[in-house]
Length: 142
Image (cartoon, rainbow, N blue to C red; front, side, top):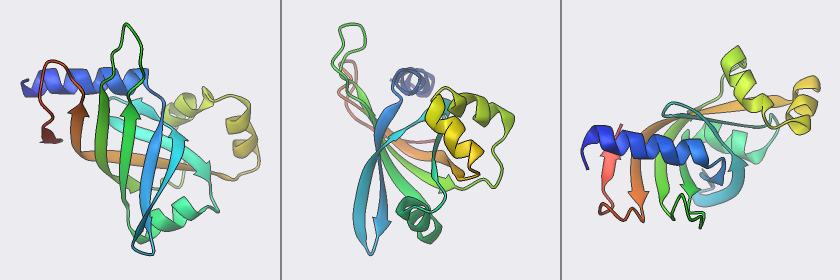
């Protein structure tokens, strides 16, 4: 699969899968949790409360490992992505990110209203598309 086909397949998986796991490191041990993700092209966003372990983890070590996909659906298959990304914690949520996260509805509005919302931006560094019938897994740097 060439680079453009890879990016297209990756974007399709990101566009169609919003729930995945995000692992961070705490005390030299991996910690994983389910998160809602939204993508702007090949950049991922999620959110959490400001006073959480995952924020502390990312402030200590900004790298996160994310799994998205692998939902058995006739029209989508079982492909999933393994992502290594570098997270940042924007101080302000920009209107485009706000619009993406607003799709979560009441919980997002509650957190935003309590001034307790922390967006997490993940810039993808490397990614592997797994269970792709047309290609062997290959790590690609973005």
